[in-house]
Image 1 (cartoon, one colour):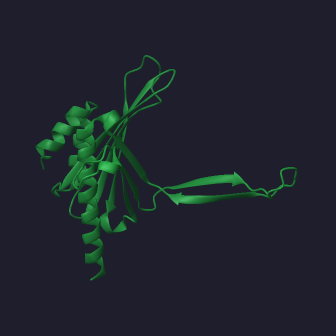
Image 2 (cartoon, rainbow, N blue to C red; image 1 turned 45 degrees about the horizontal axis):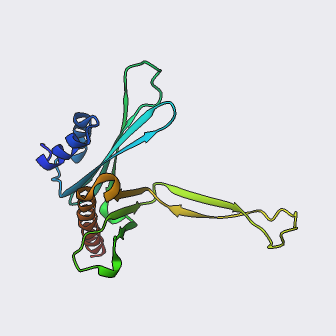
Image 3 (tube, rainbow, N blue to C red; image 1 turned 90 degrees about the vertical axis):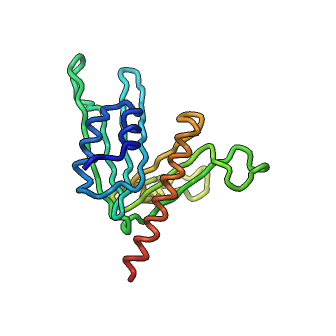
Length: 195
């Protein structure tokens, strides 16, 4: 099954092993047509190296497919580059959270239909949890007693932020359109599962 041309173009524009990512997606779609997609490239720079990462979000009628390609951190200095891949299928009705945040540049002059300058997409289906812990206190600044720890757990499997300043307005528009399509698909999948 061939991938849609626009998805292939977006993978090529990302410029990070596009043929490898195409192969992962083709192998994972099992013949299902692509309804919508978003390709996100991320680069992290530290003192010793540059790490690249691409994630392709692909929506089908029944699931959300996530395909990741990362630089392999285990490559010896001067060694040949390697990539680590993974793919994950999430049934649409299993998505517990599809949260879309939008930032607008000048809210006082907002007009209906105006595009946001930043979009964040948070997806949760129970695969990963984040824990925030902190030492408890009694409120007495001179108290030396051990009051234990408190904290919270958060289901947070994917958090994606796209900003016009960093990725350009076209990328913000694409993630906004993908997020809307995903929310609609999840809504309809939940309705079908209740029947």
